[in-house]
Image 1 (spheres, one colour):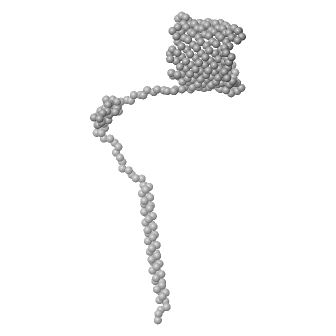
Image 2 (cartoon, rainbow, N blue to C red):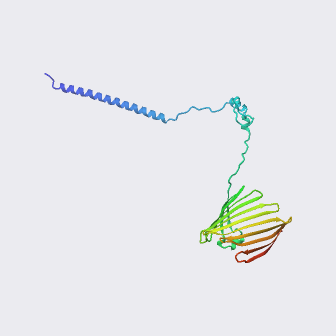
Length: 299
């Protein structure tokens, strides 16, 4: 007779075998995962470790230095001289060149502008009595060279106004030229004025010739101008004489003629000047004039 429990025993044996196989598979998978993790950590650690580079010897041997120092320099490179280090403009060796003190290069200055600042008036006695409207701050730029130039802004306090002025001048030792201009004041209630003056001075055999032209305008246009010329000549060792004449004009033409004649004396700290001047209004015929006498003595 068959045992009723035999079928159950067979089923338990199969189940136990299956469980053992599953555990073995899980163990193997865990071992592979651990091995993969260890390999990844080892690779990451290797990437973070600094690589110690092999030192490179950059020194030059005494023999090479001796050979280089003894090489001659070819000042005119040619095909036969390509075995040397030619090109340095001297007949010395490279060692001589290395030991020589280099020459200090000359410094040439171009377009050099110097800043300027001043306050007007600057005389202490005048400052004490001058009204606030007489004060101005002056800032500008000055250039000195073959062509002299200056640019200036004059800023008043009471009222707050600014006036611009500039000048260009050139001289070749015999003839001098200059061109100057002014514009302002800007600000406040005053109308600005625009002025332009051209001057010429030429040294002649008998003295110096001077000429000038001045033009003025406002926002409405041209207002007035003046053209003048004069001659200065030596009269003796210490005396100089001069004569000048000018013509004034406006939008309607010439309106005045003026002239001055005089002489100056200067010697040993003593100066003396005498002059006479006159003016004629060409429209009314009125004549005005005067005489001037100046004496100066230095002790």
